[in-house]
Amino acid sequence: MKGIIFAGCSFTWGHGLYYYSTMKNVVNQGDQFTPNLLTDAHIRYKNIFRFPRLVANHFNGFEIVREPNGGNDITSIDFVNDLFDKNKFNNGGKYDYSEIDYIILQTSQIVRNHFDVEVGGKLEKLSCGQNNSKLIKFLIENNLTYNEWFNIFTQQVFQKIKDFVIFYENKGIKTKIWCWQDDLLKYIKLDSYFSDKFITFEYEGQTYDCLDYMINLNENLLISNDKINFTELIPDQHPSKLCHEIIAKNIIKNIENK
Image: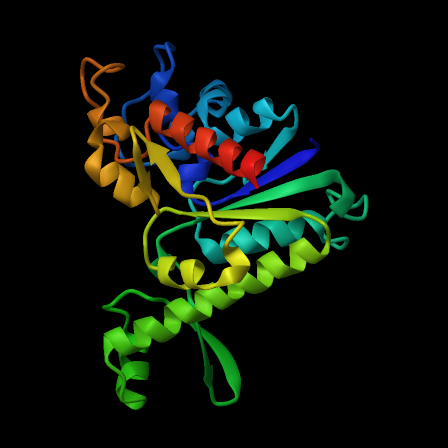
């Protein structure tokens, strides 16, 4: 296999996996992320354990992951698009479509995305927090409840993801998608286009449609509850080393089965 692009938020980046290092200079910052507290060695160490490396190693390929920590569905889409943008890099694009076999897209918390709305003939991007004043004004002006708007918003995000997947499938790059939370599940599961692209999680005899469902019933899959590897628990709510292994196993299984 050639290259595999992994696009997602801190879960894909491998937040917290540096705690599994034996290096004594790793700072316990819990759920927080202060980049200057991590050394290059910490970054390289956590990359060993994150699921992108595990999947790429299994298929004898190479992984491509967005360097900054965090993000949302739109930044994931932009990250992938930039990799092929001939105007972004001196060599005419960082990668060629022919060099990539798969894109593995992990959806993030949906409210991290912006909402596209036309105001005065211009497209404006609204932040999606419930207390955002511009969004509240938009809801009032359009006689919408928050729930009514949220339904429109999730459909908008889903359509952007579907358009993204169709584009790269047409370029010959196979795509897979898995969900951290369940906001987009009803659209993905009802759309036959995603029937062979949607990754679920099997763990200890149970199948879960999103990572949240699996973690909620197996709290040991969080770093904060990893009592096997840590005598002093770390208040970090990101996936544990074991959880990354489970994610990798299910991605590999989906690719091989489909």
